[in-house]
Image 1 (cartoon, rainbow, N blue to C red):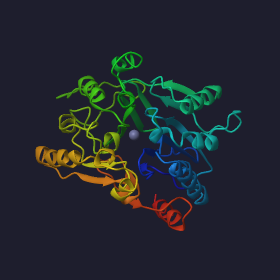
Image 2 (spheres, rainbow, N blue to C red):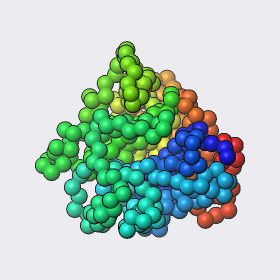
Image 3 (cartoon, helix red, strand yellow):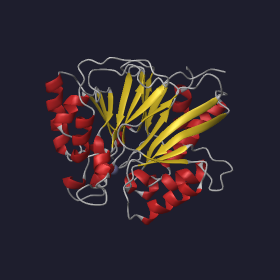
Image 4 (spheres, protein in one colour):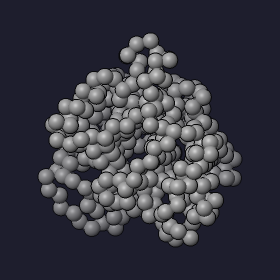
Length: 348
Ligand SMILES: [Zn+2]
């Protein structure tokens, strides 16, 4: 039975919204696939079953290929309680975690801690809390998790912001959970919709380090981490669908991404739904900012919009750049979708 030694990052095209699946390397001991899921878009009801259907299809391809006999979702993470991030969460949990605990596949649920008045999201939390097999965690910056050889560091929300969630000035977007995924020398940052208040904290709490000394520790959490800059990564999911409120040149110069994914609809998708450019993503200022960044760090930045290219799979093997990138536009019930995923899994 072949074993998967790679980390795959799947961006599911849900038009306007976030839906990301991490497919972890197998542990080499058991034929069980392991996933982490970050956000369950989308803004429009028609698109809200897409991440559930995508993960179901992915699991089926691997079962049919006799690579796995079972699977587990190590965590389901809702970065913040806006419906373009939790819109498909109920549909997702209804399939992967039944409420009577007999067939639960979700080990943990990660929430940002923002006390939202959304009845829909609050009901989802009530259901999750009623399931004793799901560990419910409210994350803050500085936490780190380990799934086999993949480590996930929490960059945001800062406790300083969390302490203000009920008082003044912190909007839902700035409550977003921001994660840095680390696998060998492969680094990916997933941002939710974090805006300037959040990035101000992250750039302060995760400073540049010119030189680091490493000591062995029992958990392996202190092993070498990339570069001098804790925010540097190869792949950045640009914050807030490319909003001008989510991205600044200042922190992009710290992150220095080689490739950027913008989780937004196509221009035609927005034109059919919004009346002016304010409601369209990415905002025009972002392309200018990225143009300036390319000059500033002397690097060409690969830019992709999910609404233009469809679903995207990046396969990382532990090196700085991904070994492969796959783009495909069909929904999970189409033959082409199955063929693409089969091809992805032909050669482990
Ligand atoms: Zn959003």
